[in-house]
Image (tube, rainbow, N blue to C red; front, side, top):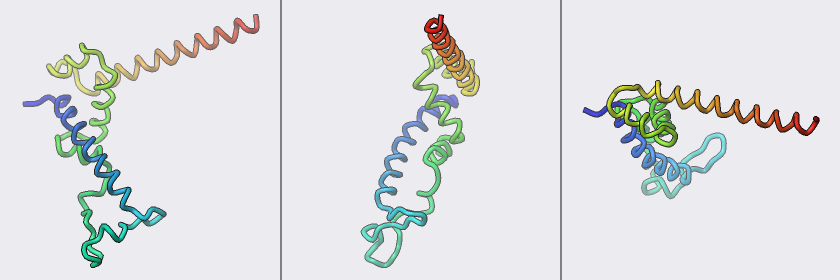
Length: 130
């Protein structure tokens, strides 16, 4: 059995593939408010679209569904994969922590870092005026 984190890592790979497919779909669109497939992407000029209903929707949601996670959870795993420490990732792999717990820890760390940077910038401005 895979943990949700491991499922999410698989989902990220699927997401990358689906995003490439989405770029292809965009490249075949006429654009505008009501985009339509370009003529070269209809079968034998009969107006039958090559892309089906399953091609619609957000890539993250489709990839998430394939691995049993929501698209939002998949986005969280994507952020965790880039920003989490080895220890945090290990906690996820062993089931000691949830995706939401680690994601919230990273958000809190980010907020603290931003606040610290704001204070440093404020101190620099104060020095200029003193």
